[in-house]
Amino acid sequence: MLLPLDDVGEGPAVLLLHAGIGDRRMYADHLQPLADAGVRAIAVDLPGFGEARMPDEEDAPWLDVIDTLDQLGVERAVLVGNSFGGAVALRVAAVAPERVSGLMLVSAPGEGIEPSPQLAAVWDAEASALEDGDLDAAVAAIVDGWTLPSSSSELRELVAAMQRRAFETQLAGPEAPEARDPLEGGLGAIANVAAPAIVAVGEHDMDDFRLAAEGFAAALPDARLETIAGAGHLAPLEQPERFRALVLSVVR
Image: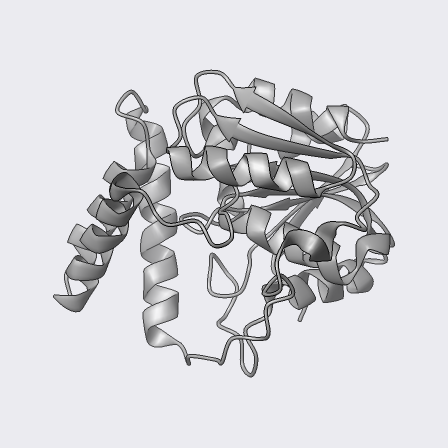
């Protein structure tokens, strides 16, 4: 599947993978600055988000990412993923490490970590609203749970619009079976990812994601751990200049 995408610039490829409460619009303001810095910036919509349809057969977004790279003629790319996008990037790296020239994970979810009461409360509020068929309440739960209290109205409105579209697509589409998880056996699957990596977490993000970042940084052979000052869970939107600086630091 060729995923819907924006493709700007020339040079080493940087593939931007969005959070599970977003779509490729969260990177819209990053594409031209990254291109101006000498890279080919590519932002995609993962299946079920933005303009991307639900998967027809097997839900394996990491394979759709690889297929998209193939169709674009990109042999190797720096993979940059926020939250769910970071989880997808890790799985691309696990199954095709030779395609990864660099890796940047921003608030990626951990494996086998018991959710904190704060995280569980966000999930419960979303699930309860969806069970009641109240899409407005579900969107509000997402915005309140995943943005900082100090977030601008513009940021909150963008998250709300992206999440509403995802809900509408996912609730209306077929439910494909999940593919076998490349990391179901643990983080040993990424031990052979030789590419340089940055594992970042927002200063104000939930502890769940800090613990996860520490685990990923320990498992990846060439990784460094970064805390993004002033950011919560959505650093590309909350601290865009610092985010871009980190992205460019992993491009070689």
